[in-house]
Length: 148
Image (cartoon, rainbow, N blue to C red; front, side, top):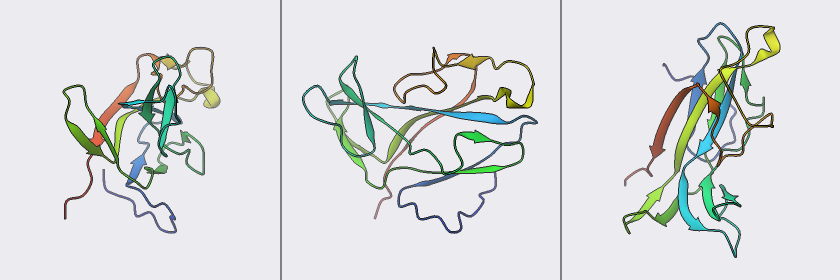
């Protein structure tokens, strides 16, 4: 998609501009990637959320000013937290990442349309470390820091 400039944005992280080309309002669900950083005895670094069941930190996105629903034809601007995170991956390698995870999209029933094919268990929004139940369009990616 062509990028819509983020005029007036005070965000300091990486910028993502998303346009809803569907005919219905869509909800954006963020599922952050697992950093394997232990949070059993200390809080996660800024921009990460602790999964209390696994005691590991997951990437998170701050909620956009307009909320998580994007209207048909509208744009949503997202900004990652401002700092990179370095952690040891499952292979023992140190990696530095700006953000990693998945953005999923499912229909918002506010328009009176059909029920969505995906949802969160017993919640309006899933925690960043919990994925949706059901079928949703998804985009999964990792943003690496810019090289000098």
